Length: 450
Image (tube, rainbow, N blue to C red):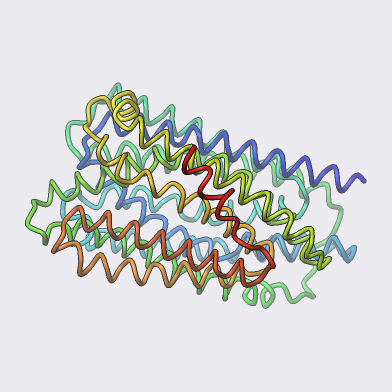
């Protein structure tokens, strides 16, 4: 009973924290978008995609590895090995974090010149690269707390990090008003880096207070290094492919837009307007679905383990019906009130036409989010990963060949092709793995008419 209460508490806490952090993150993105130019937003978006690829390298699946290994030690009453396991994990994290830092730091001149269109110097990338070892070790410690069922401390650190980052960046943008794109990017990445370091310090403090409660000696007779490598290698390999393709996709967009005959500044502005302003806006209501869908994974894992197909099918039918109704409702709001929403949220930018064009994507993206979570709960995460990687290959191909011909309209076409393909294949896999039948009348026709 106690374990059940702890599990429920952790699940609710993570959901609330996730919803809170995503909400303030989107409000902060809107604030930033109204403070800086569209071109600066475009450059910043590219910086963050490059950065996230190196974050993937630095973390390399260590969170799951630590969570799994330490959970096993607790289950087998081998708490004397926990300190050994976490120290091996921290050492692995530090190595990967330093490796990612070195690669990004020294490749930043090449990246800025070739991928960021020479708009900024390498300073921004060098600053943000400093955070990589801290992120890597934090990821390892988060896995430890997850295994110990003590996610409260992780949630506290995440909230501290986000609040500090927002306050610090707002201070810099308002007091030291940036005069160039480079100044803007430096201020924002400096806030990101310092907030990651601050979060790491708090997390490390919580870790030391918690680990000292375990009365055990350092055990050298173990196989943890091999276990860590065995768990992290397949995760890291697939994550590198997916993150690398995702980064390549984003880098190609403004480059191929330029080939359509528009200037570099115009290409970056269009890219920044869509990816940095419109997409966060239409994805904001998805926070509620995303937070809810994260709870579906353990629920469907439980039902799948019991092979209770009737309950699985019943749950899927109810969830999909609600998701379709919610998605059509939100899509209708954005479609009908695109002018009002864009004028209120982005008063200095004329984005209403972009909001209206992209609003039908809401249905595809929201439903795909739910379906992916259900599939992961049904132990089909490999299929989900495969679909996402194939989707990236298709998107990159269309971006490369279509954007020089169609310009920004080509990018809209790519977005719809990508989301439709991803959603259709994922839905097909779900129908194949379950006995669920599409209820066209109640899921699609009625919500669409209403």
